Image 1: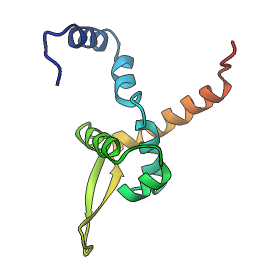
Image 2 (image 1 turned 45 degrees about the horizontal axis):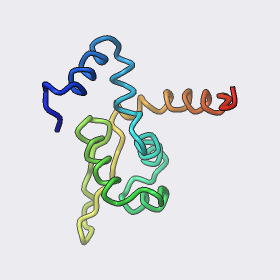
Image 3 (image 1 turned 120 degrees about the horizontal axis):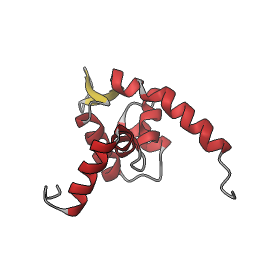
Length: 117
């Protein structure tokens, strides 16, 4: 947790107040977040399934990202009844679902972007 009087906190607050795009980028621009959201949307909605689909992410980072997305109301965690140990699956909220067309547009833009330009 950053101090509220730190330069980073003040600059971030300023950028968020200037343009909501900065808020959106802060939410989805973090490493792994878009892939986690996409994986959940495609049915890899349990921790072990995401870990299989994203083998280069550490369990600690995946867990932290899932917790953050849950706090941001992008995903919700649901218990799977009658599983031992208790299983959970992750579901996109309506806010999370609304990101999917945005990701598709950004993906198309990324494919057309010329890194050599």
